[in-house]
Structures are given as C-alpha cells and as structure tokens.
Image 1 (tube, rainbow over the protein chains, first blue to last red):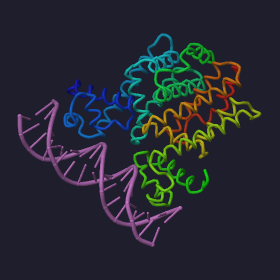
Image 2: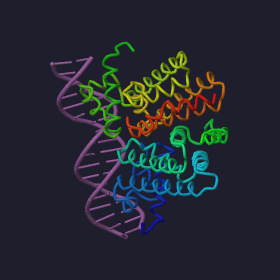
Image 3: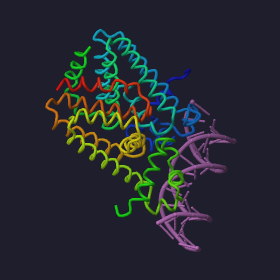
Image 4: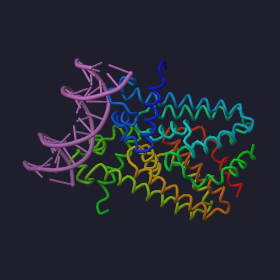
Length: 176
Length: 176
DNA sequence: GTCTATAGGACGATAGAC
DNA sequence: GTCTATCGTCCTATAGAC
C-alpha cells in the first residue's frame, strides 16, 4: 500500500454506497461519484471491480484482526470486550462495522466474500476458545456476535437489544 | 395462488441457483434453465425479476409464520423448538432454510429483502416475548437464531456448533 | 403456456488526451 | 493521476409465432 490516501477514500465510498443504497447501486460509476472521482480515476487505483472487492475484504480482515488483538489485551476480558465492541460498532459508525456490514450485504457477489467472512468468524472463535475455559460459552459468544452483525446489516443502527446489552453480557459471563 | 406447480418449481430453482452459484449467476435465463423452462416461459409466470424476488419473499414469510405457529403449539416449548428447528433447517435442506438462506444472500439486491428479513425477525421476537417470561432470554434466543441463519448463509451445512446444540439450548433454557 | 428472436439499456473495462 | 469517450458484453423485458 504505497499511496493510502486515494485508495482509502475510494474504499470508504464503496462501503458507504453499499450500506446506504445497496450493492445494486454500487457500480464503478456510483462509487466513483461518491468518492469524488471519475470512473477512469477509480480504475487507476483499482484495476477492476474484483480488485475493489478485494480491497474491501483485505481491510475487513485487518480491522477484524486488530479488534481481536485489542480484545485479547482488554482488562475487562475478551467476552465482554468483544460483545460490547460489536454492539458499539453496530450502534455507531466504527470502521469495522462499516466494513463488516458492507461485506455481509455483498455476500451475494462472490464466493470470496463468504470465505473472508468465515475467516473472520473463525478468528473470533479461536480467540474465544483460547481465552474462555468453557467451549460452549465460547461458541455462544461467537453466535451472538454473528447475530448482532446480521442485525446490523438488516436494520442499521436501531435495534431493540441495545438497552439490554449489559444484562445479556453478564448472563453469558456468569456461565463461565 | 391458483396454479402452484409451475410457480413453485421456478421459485425452487431460483433459491437453488442463488444458494449454489450466487445471485450474480441468478439471471432469468439461469433460473429458467434450472427450472427446465425457457426465459419466456419463466416470464409468463413472473412478469419481471422483481416479481420473482417478491415471490421468494412471500414464500419466506409464509414458511416463517408457519414455523412459528408450530413452535407455539410445540410441547417442548418455543425456545427449544425454535433453536432446534433453526439448527435442523441449517443442517438439512428444509424449505424454510432454503428460502431464508437465499434471502440473506439476496440482501444485496433490494431494500425489500432487508425489510422482509426484519419482519421475520420481528415475528420471532414477538412470539418469544409473549411465550418466555424473561425478556432478556427472549432477545438472546432471537440473537442466537440470527447468528445461526447468518452462519448458514456463510458456510452452508457444516458448522462446528452442531455437536453442541443441546447443551447450548439447555443453558439458555436454564435462565428462564 | 411455452417458445425464439430481438430491442433497449446498463455495466465493466480500454484507449488515449491532458 | 485524472479525465472523456467508446467498445463489447450481458441482462431484462417485449413481441409475436406456435
């Protein structure tokens, strides 16, 4: 990644168009317009639409790994950190949330998207299994996280669960 | 629905193509080929691609409502029934699973899909809140169900959770 | 009811000026 | 690096024969 600025701006636009208007509108021209460049300008940075998707997926994996690293180091523990950060990501416009939501909405486009999402889930599961003694609880945390991600993709920032978060986390933690 | 046979066969083909090859390949011609008719034949039953999507979504809502009705009447209780049927649907090729997986993969195409999925989740939540005394547990069940659906869309029939299902359900039920 | 043929439009990608 | 212009392709939808 030699020149981050333009690339990142185009990726931001891509995510935003997918989330706001749906992947159907996420044509090269639509993304370019949102990024403030022309179609030709976009194609200078990403040589094809596949390259654009790859750029988004690479960013997603990086953000997911970074989040897990922070979860591992977190003093409140991986479970509470992961679920709380996921819920926060859903409620606010955190980069990881934008990338993950866009990826889920793009599940259709190509097998690489599903593969990358599986990789993210697997990474989360490995951390949970390693840090939480009980494997069933670990799996439960991953499942609830997946549910939150799907919900974010379906209904955006508003979700009936936001007021019950802490109670929910406490219950899950109590099982460890 | 006067003549179910041809319509249903086309909808089956549509779901299958979306699940197996992705919505990108799910063109009118691809669906028609899988259904054993020509493009013109398909368009006689569904006047447009939008009508085809609508047909899938209507079927999804119907199957979801029927499943919830069965859950309500189930002697083992809504929680156990819902989670077990969701997991079974994920593992095997139950109609509800096929429709739900296809819909999630089609999240991309149009806002109506997200709207319908929200409606399904809302219906599940209403049943859970009505039947389960504790609202936090009700929300947890809906969340875990969503997680299972997303997982089905991502990784198909194989999931590491399948061996831990009953333990997981027992733990959730124990909280009521 | 189901087919073939084709019109009409949109998208991805290339070429070349600046 | 970014632009405009254009080509080729694929898809939806229509028209009309059978």
